[in-house]
Amino acid sequence: MQSIFTWYAKWIREGKLKVNSDWNKNLKIKFTVQDPCNIIRKSFGDACAQDLRFVVKSCVGEENFVDMAPNMSNNYCCGGGGGFLQSGYTEERLAYGQKKLDQIVATGADYCIAPCHNCHSQIHELAEHAPKHWGTVHLWTIICLSLGVLCRNERTYLHDDLKEVNIPEWDETEFLV
Image (cartoon, rainbow, N blue to C red; front, side, top):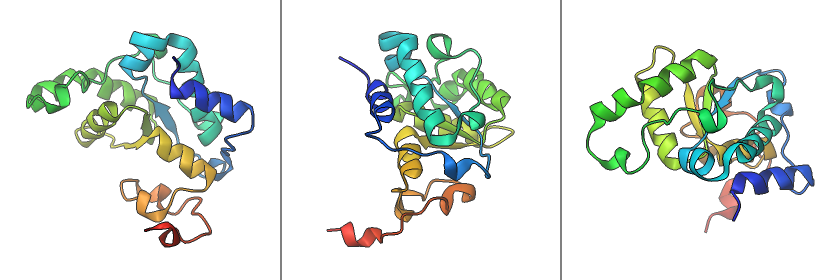
């Protein structure tokens, strides 16, 4: 069994997944990445975390990636996993996530890429309580943006700085059924 991060990295290295970070050369939008507990710390470890970073850097530009400290297998939990998002203990969950909030703020990143849905939801909510509000984005969204296939209707949750970046030339409505 392998993580999808490892497959993305393999496909990028082989030229099968043709991501491109040129869209961010002049914009210089900074990104950090959350290491999901179940995928990195509890399962596949630092090798998978390195693959995740390779994918992110390939999509946003190495110069626009800011890593958290600590990171990879030593990264902090966001506080949203294990059913905690649905537990009803919102104040406690956000208090537990304060360490993650501080960690993201310390990077100065404009966006936190969250490959896990629970991490995405928790980190997005943490951003609403942060002194510096960052955007939270799914890994797949950044991959699609870097491929030039992220449609307008898939950008509704992005900040204005990414709303018009690398828009596909084709009309997405032609693919709607």
